[in-house]
Structures are given as structure tokens and as C-alpha cells.
View 1 (cartoon, rainbow, N blue to C red):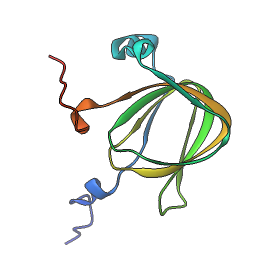
View 2 (cartoon, helix red, strand yellow; view 1 turned 30 degrees about the vertical axis):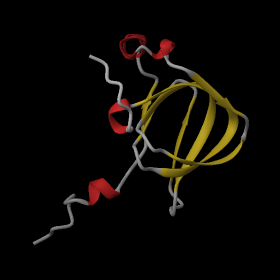
View 3 (cartoon, rainbow, N blue to C red; view 1 turned 45 degrees about the vertical axis):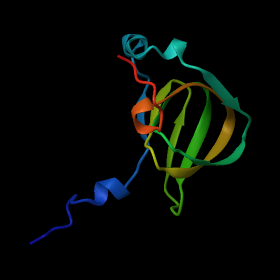
View 4 (cartoon, rainbow, N blue to C red; view 1 turned 180 degrees about the horizontal axis):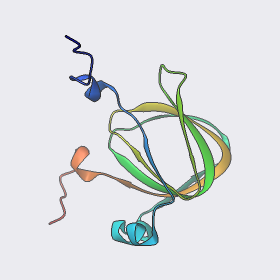
Length: 115
């Protein structure tokens, strides 16, 4: 019997998801333009995500290397990116980044909830 297919390894296999060029209606639905903005210059940035983050890149180019792995996910301007809570990675930014971002309040220790 082959028991290797997806038992509980999914919780350990945190991965970044990239939605390439989402439609304007999808961006409006998410309210992206009301999210705060963040930017960084080219360089390497080790990051640890204590909450799930969804971001939309207005400009830039990034290779995100998961900690302890040589594998990377590449994304850039026009991409909607989701980073799971608990992921440690290094962002290798080749083109300066400007992005809108939002942290998922349900995955942080926040006591304020939207109704």
C-alpha cells in the first residue's frame, strides 16, 4: 500500500501561491486598493510570516526561497501572492517592490474581528 500521498504532510509543506494577472473584478472584490502599501529596494530579505499574508505586486520582481530549501517561487508585478502563516523564506528582490498587502486577522492574535 502506498501511503505517501498527502497524509498530514500538507501542514508541514507550507508554500507560496501565486495568481498571475488576476482580473480587475477579482482585485475589486478583494478591496486591494484600500490595503496598505509596502516597498523595498533590491536585495535579500529573510522573512518569517506570523500571519497569512496576501499581497498584490504593483511593481517588482522576487524569487522567494523557502528556508532550508533551494527551491523558489518567482513572482512580480501584476501577481496576487499568498504566503501561509508560519513560513520562513528569503525574498531575493531583483527589481524594487511596491505592493499592497493584507494580513489575515484570523491567523494572528488579534482581538478585533470584522462582523
